[in-house]
Length: 269
Image 1 (tube, one colour):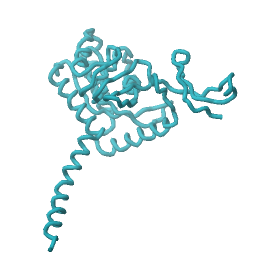
Image 2 (cartoon, one colour):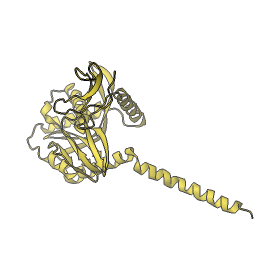
Image 3 (spheres, one colour):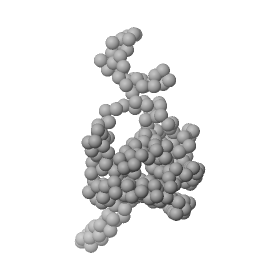
């Protein structure tokens, strides 16, 4: 019996399924989740903030400097410029339960019994705020208090610990922005800030994104040796036992001791 026709049909069906599997992998990727989250925040800003009062600048990549020497880049999801201040928005598209506090280096995401760590978005956005602040201070004396950090979570997630007032879910982020009602910039200053951001940002495109991704990977690799506490998320530090059977041996202990007494079970000599 000649099976060639059946085999040809199977191979043809397989090739038709390849685009489907590629699409599924893209939809599940962190990149797509990030893009989707930013798109949802764009809609929130468009529908719930008056465009005459709030000017949105999206996907801003700025160079970072240390002692006037360029040290890579930082990428900001959204910058909103208004008479009421400048709002630097970091978007997180996540699901599950979210645990964290303002001072923890890492927060926890829990989906059923699975827990995973992610960088404290307040710390992440702090760099964004400082970079933007430096960019504006290079041109004019913008007051630090006029720049606000805003973290907006999107997706099927819920907070299981008390969050700072500038960490909100979806529409709540917009309400936080609208809660700032003191006028700090006149129309001329607002327009000048918009122009400074636009002129200071790196050109949008594949090359800029590629360079930024490379810089982020270098940062991650540099921090790969940093250990985090499994209980509170703070950094673990190398200590030396002063008494007991392990006296003189080094071990990893939580940097927040005595508040957190967690240690790694392995003792290093």
